[in-house]
Length: 273
Ligand code: DGL
Image 1 (tube, rainbow, N blue to C red):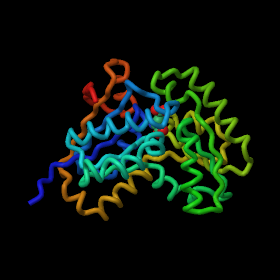
Image 2: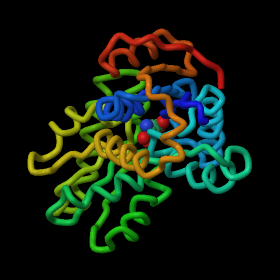
Image 3: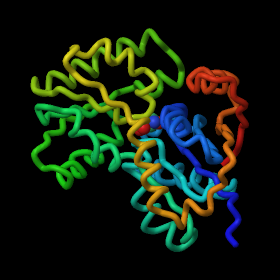
Image 4: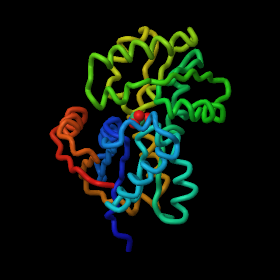
């Protein structure tokens, strides 16, 4: 008989993944969740692919050691730069029964539904943009959709620091650059989970006809579909709801921001990975 003790792990470089966790919990308040934010090493978006891979793998392995059977990389930068290598080279050798999922393919599968013109802007970190993964995956999904990608500059870092003044200046500059790429863009995807934390501020600066899409709800729905299809994983997951928050940073400020952004009083542990 299989013991149903497994958890769902959610990983991000910092605070952004909370926007995914929140929606997943809202849709499926029936599992044990363990969140890890690598706030000590954030931002990942301007690091090399090797560095992003090593940090992401360390986070995933920490989640596995702490009971996760399945881990969602709630981070586009990690999904773009580490997921494939983890799935192909690490899991089959070291963790053949565990799973790691990303959030880019689920997003690409959904975003064309939001656009009438088929011209979609992606706002993401430098490392995600440079990987060209959104363009490549969209080409497979629907080659008629045009993707215009734009780096969000220092935004993820400013969100971690909660520096509102510089944040607004940065939003203005990156949004202007993005929409000047093509005047048919009618949908902008927040392809960095951190940006969902400032979705309102971004939407206010974008022209009103442009639809802003963040990933939380769609990733939650895709995860639910995945668990329904993959009974071999689902059967190992505990069905007693609980939430466990962890960060690699020892700063009180980070812990306060986690509470603030999650929107509930939560208790957070500081961990070494
Ligand atoms: N939250 C991350 C993402 O979705 C990365 C932010 C960063 O660490 O640069 O891309």
